[in-house]
Length: 272
Length: 148
Image (cartoon, rainbow over all chains, first blue to last red; front, side, top):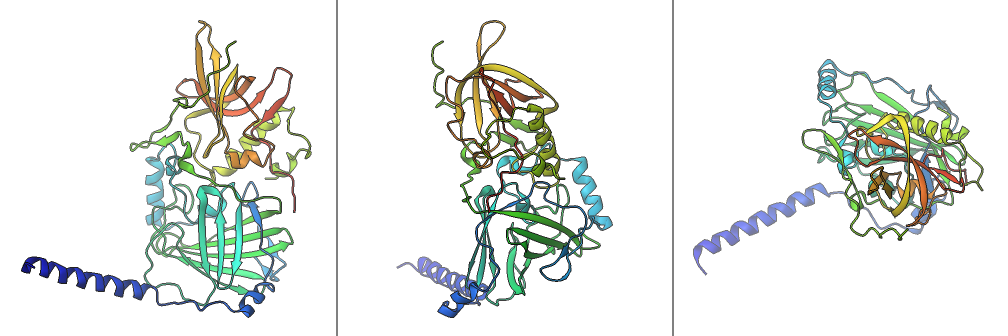
């Protein structure tokens, strides 16, 4: 073997070792195998099973007292941006694209993905709550196994989420969001945005999700919204492949358009 | 907004006789979804200030995401057949509101109510349709009936 290739092999091995060390560092929490008691404990939690749909309107006006937890819910608030982020918002508005990037099938991240006019399903398993979101076929993983939030999370669309139960309320904290997502249309956030969500049943088939967004760089006060969801026992989550037949687009200049080329498979209309 | 509930129609009804109800629901829907919950995209390319109608023969009904598409052959005033494309709500949304992939079949004669494209091209946003026998179906019913 030539010395050069020997050296490159050593380098490759060293890099591989470094890679695995860094992976191991990111995955220090190892969830133990669930026991029968862990499965049985799920039966004592509120019944979140099934498919739920955010009610159109999404955001009831006024504050709602949460009887389930006996304290006032988080109060819906108006956005209060820092001067720096207000300027950024104004700039975004001034150069607003005619449509948002979801026209190009880029899914919204948090918090917008929780406000889509499509249903979501909650799955409770030991150590985890999984939310299957029909819009864009998305999934959120909320770890309830006692792990801590990462100190330096990779920024992503849904953040990294942990949860715990306070009585009958699932409390979820999420951090680590890419700045590609928005708090609201044209309302940007920093990489320090955090989201606190409280999920609880206000009656057997009505769920309320209270969402509080904080961001030390973008917001001067928490931005709080409430959403009401209704359960549909006869529904199942359907697939949603945005790229299947997406004819909408926003081009790089921000101009919205639509592709009107008829499908090649179009059946010829019967002769008249 | 209480539009969703007030616009519920009885479980057995697939048709909405009052087209204006559908349009009101659409406007309502657009308003609320524009506040951050827009399903797929905005309506920048459509003129939502007035509704138009056009009659033709269904060429194909695409039961696809993120939108259904209805392709309709329309004979223009020069006698030429032009295929128009109308973008509708998703199969997920419509499937829970009385529609199916068989709701429209090639050869069906329909009159489409739509928001026109601002650029004047042969297409638009599909609001509702009417058959020659008077049957009418809207894209924009409110919330589905509760089934919990």
